[in-house]
Image 1 (tube, helix red, strand yellow):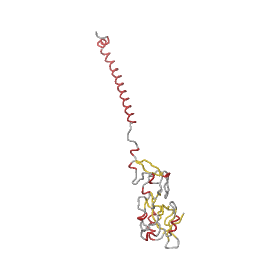
Image 2 (image 1 turned 30 degrees about the vertical axis):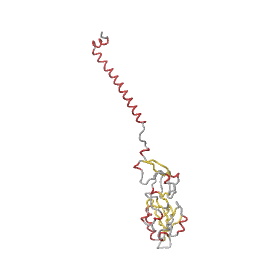
Image 3 (image 1 turned 135 degrees about the vertical axis):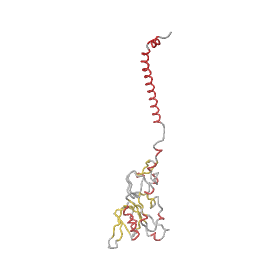
Image 4 (image 1 turned 90 degrees about the vertical axis):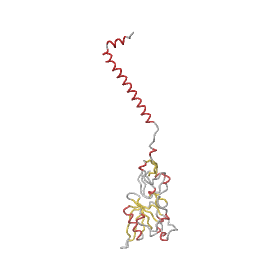
Length: 240
């Protein structure tokens, strides 16, 4: 026999059709909720799944841990490692703190500034340059090395070699030369900083053994003038 419910549906088809969409609608809502739950679960799995870390997309670079003045011999506390994106790493950047500790800073640096080989002085010349034995006999404009936007280093030979024994990295000096028009000296540069003093090379030409080179840091706009003047006439320094 046909069930009573089916007989009722056959006798009143319109009532059955009106109730059927409600059932379908409830079923669709259940499906949508299940789908949403599945998507949320997938997103959670992706979020916690192991992937490429930020560290793998960066490179270690030595940076200054604080503001460091010109002529400072770097210590462990002066430098630290930071991770930078590849496009932010400068050419010649140091990658280990051991490469920086013990070297002298050729120009002042702000905290967090990446250190490169050109910024450091090792053995009397910039770390990326030649050794002390390769220094030219004289000094000149070609020997000026720009270290920052407003600071440069220049090697000079002092007319009084004995003064070099008083100089230490970080010593502040004024560069003086004779004024041909008077008996007074003329100041070529004020408040320069001694970066290092190099020993003369015993195997070089006699003209190059007149005395050690004094590498000083000073404003870039006066560095070339000081280098050129040291070629034409004797120069010396006074301690501040």
